[in-house]
Image (tube, rainbow, N blue to C red; front, side, top):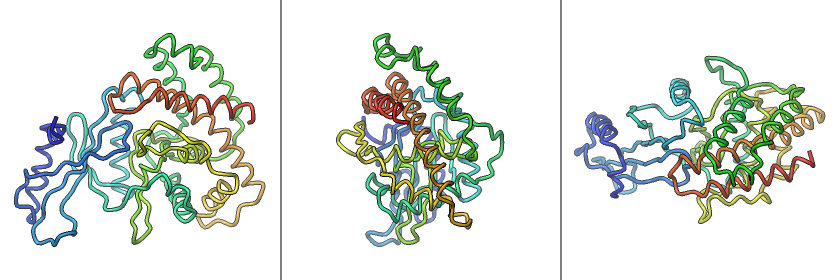
Length: 337
């Protein structure tokens, strides 16, 4: 199939309509379609037009087309995600929504680079992410501010149980996982760290940076919602083990999980970024301890996501091998914590 053919006709009409309003584009239908790697839930394409009056190397006109993955509505409510996207757009937190079609949307193209796996370990970039994440958590989003972490876990467990084979259910011990989820919820019930609007999927591919201003933009809000901020930070730390642009994108290297000193630096910058006084050692230690506990929840959530995705998503990714590694980390870390 030609790359152009992967763009639905409804989306092409939106693209034609947008480009027709740009005086520097002579042929609104002459588009270049570039698939973007690293997306694990949707298919994402960069759309380019030649713009007149620009010298070679200058930016032409471009937008982003996002085609929703088949069957992924089991993970989140698409209308909720669109509302979040539109709220972010209005408040300058992300790309503008340029159009919607039946199974996707057209977004503004952010002229910044997507971070790489190694960027998350760069002290300067990590500090900027920490400050930006605090700002994100403080967003006054409309709607209920109820924590949805535990409901998500239980809903995804039910979905995994209904979709996977008996062999997989046995391998991943899905019959006893409900009890372990309840145990974790009880363990973390006394956690007094605040609730915030969390991204819940802060991997490097969802972070963009302007090279000149060093400004960070957090994108892709499918999994966003209110949760303990310790969970969101824990999930970000877990993502430091991944490189979704390698030859084996499903393989995780937990030697890259940040050391205590790196975690402490991130949390210190996070807590101080709102202009508050230096956090006490006790405050730092308390949050760091909660983060490590919530890392267990992250392993379970994305392990279940892998099991479900194997059945509903056609993106070329070894979801089961990914799930296997997340459950393995859960089993390794739980006794220690």
